[in-house]
Image (cartoon, rainbow, N blue to C red):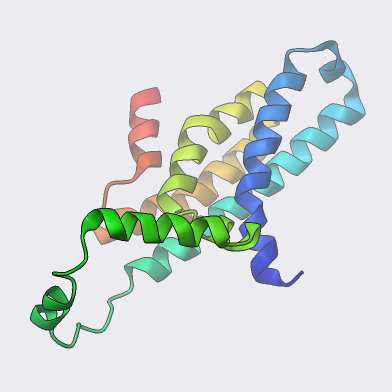
Length: 165
């Protein structure tokens, strides 16, 4: 596997790790020191890497693009195609893609929403040390919140932070 396919698997792995970790936290297995240490160390790494991937993809997506050649000609070309046909074509493309290509369709907004609603609150459930929580939150602010404020877009993490305070 190359580096791109590894990055594509980070977010699905974070989702699985969050679900499994939440289940383990409710059992007596969480009292095992080694299991808790492995769970928290891997979880912090996954969250950090997902923050980095989301931040870099967001920055790449917000870069100004070259203007289209002729928007009127583009609109004329699409007159014959209906919106429903476009949806069917897109869903057929997604169905025939491999798992790596499907994982690449994950948008930074989806990653950010998951981070805000499940991953960051799970840091408290997993009883992760305070310095690691501070490190993860400062990375989230640096790579996701600050660039979205500079770009003037709405950030899910920022709204979650304001709601939870």
